[in-house]
Image (cartoon, rainbow, N blue to C red):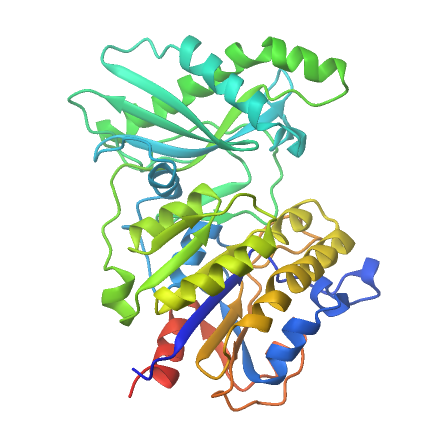
Amino acid sequence: MHGRKLLYVLLDGVGDRPDPALGGKTPLEIARTSALDSLASKGVMGSVYTVGRGIAPESDVAVFHMLGYKLGEDYPGRGVVEAVGACVEFRDGDLALRANFATVDPDFRVIDRRAGRNLSDGEAGSLSSALNGQVSLGLPDAKVYFKHTMGHRLIVHVRVENVRLSANITNTDPAYQRVKGMGVARTTWNSMKVEEAKPLDDTDEAKLAASIVNMITEESFRVLEGNPINERRRRKGKLPANIVLMRDAGDKLPRVESLVEKVGLRMAAIADMPVEVGISRIVGMNVELSPRVDDYRWKAARASELLKSFDGVYVHLKGPDEPGHDGKPLAKSRSIESIDMDFFSPLLDVIDLEHTIVVVSADHATPCQLKAHSDDPVPVMVSGDDVESDSTTRFTEKEAMRGSLGILEGPQVLQMVIGRYFKE
């Protein structure tokens, strides 16, 4: 090693496509990003298929891949990863699922997968408490626990004493499907109806798990539809959070090589979303919880401090993903500008680029025209005084395509960076 430090930043969903609303440009292209431009002028760029060509990944499996882990059918599932992040007591043979509070009509047609994206933490916490107190599975020794995490998000944890459940089941959330053990976003779907969970094999464990998940779906609607919180939301013109949509079941704790064993760097992580906290804990990073998702100045200051004590710092910034899902390209561009101004700019004022390698990329693209994750490649930039520039000047999709790094796959990124700049 050469005493260098690594700052590794993933911008959630930042990749996009040329948008008619932006004159045929992407949100990255119209964003004013002086700090990222400065890094680009000192670095090299390329494009990354984070999980693989033709795969529109969820953030969890994409981040694992961008951290150097190539996962397949043995992937434990996002439900377990988020359970780890939220400190849910989970053991092998339990079932954990990532879930959303959503809005449906009486025929279970999905009106909004995120209950208007305006469910407060207080409302969601109270609804989770109602579910924990009123949902009954009608099975001996079976217990279900609902753990709210943030906004419309929650975790569903199921345990049946002396029985091992199988996660080899389909999702009830129509926007995502399971492909070789991984959660993959559907870029198009004809039905926006709550789906029935089905076993993907003929085992009793999978059949029981699917049956329980379907019972939870029915029970969640029964409990939530007339809940006083939802009655108040309706009176205010807001969508009710009247059902729980579930996806990405897992039935075992993940066991992977630690990041320090894999790349030889002691890493810290700055995280706020449960999935990010879970991933960071699973790969053995020291986890720092941020006070707010959009408190970029705090994250910049904390990252600079952590670089003094650790070989590297990993930061996941959520900002651009939500306007991508909402189909708001201008808002997405403004989010990118906020990250540039409040995270990268103050950080570049204090870190030593002579001894720091800065890597900036994304976990996936979330094109505003799709309002969903896509299989598009995302930009990757490697910058620092020791990096010989390839004449790229901006962190954009178009510049990435002409960068000297070419086209990479997610697990190659860290391997390439470590091999070039951290090995003697």
